[in-house]
Length: 528
Image (cartoon, rainbow, N blue to C red; front, side, top):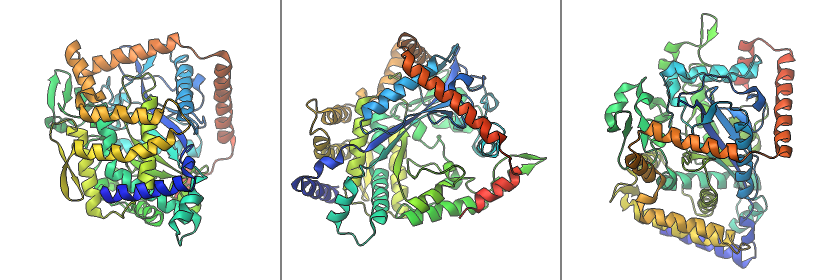
């Protein structure tokens, strides 16, 4: 880390000397938050996505993820993360006005599941694009089971300030074009995050326990865990079981070796997986008795099926493949996907977390980022799994540059490297919000009992409650909070108008002449 810190320090010194350091501020931040709709008795909702919220196909900010009951709330990107969080709060207020007797589960790991079939797959209407989204989810069911897909998390979207790029480009004296330089820099950020991203799990992991009924469809996995009580399994030192190997993982994906060393390598390796047949999935079949079971029988049906802690992103046009959008227009932002829902917060994330994440991502950008080998990727994955399962274990060691290092020592190094970045982000802020957020995380490194994962287990112990009961009671409290904090009439009307417009848009799409679905799919996958 020392060499990387030296590079970071040199880069920050140059930015400061040239008066460009303030350009680190103002990168755009957007948040995507998934939550299961559940009934007051704790079971997953069997009702359709509430019509009053708009069309899940076309609404820009309120949609569904895997399940009809797995709502996804999306904010526009804002320069000040406080605006992103305020918008997320507003969406929650609007959603709660239309949930009737349901609430949003505040935990990442699902409770109240009565077998795979109790999880309704999301519906998106009769258009080809709507059918494709539904069939894709059918494929995930046949490949991984529905229960796996009902896990919820938060995605943190970040784009580097536009004005910073020409300055970094000039400072680097790169032979590349500016667009190529930007792509390379984003992939450097991603590689550094893959090295250091285990820190997010340690600090913010909030899924140390799992309901036993989560394993109904895969009982063999239960043997890995200890029993907390009759209804709960756990690891005593776990931070984020959502991000462990019982999460959204599969053996075929573990062997993919997606290339993060360049945008061309990434697009090419991901495209290969989408075009490579997989015998196990060929047995499932694609079109069986006139019904689609999956989009295809390849290793990945589409790009979104590949699970990763961070994705390079470009805004895709309607019907455009994400890899093609990247290839044509480069990386526009990154999507960090390793954040659990904060069970202690009604919207699942707070300002300190968001500011810390922004500072960490900038630190990953500004440090040198050597290319990764397949072996290093395995080491990075092993570090992540160790922290997910045992992150609070005293004396836990990770592998850094093929040498053992105490998690606490490495975490302290990373936090120290972030201090000058936080200081720059705080330059016009008397309250020093970024430095304050950093100090709070330093306390968690020094005392793991203060982490969310430890506090959840401690409260479950004190209250003598299984995870499902603790998560349900806390979620009910969140629901009561939103009942007492209703959205003002002007914002409510704005969301009502968006909902109505989204229904009109879906109707317009469905009223357009549709080509046969199999031809539509063929054309989609032929894009190049």
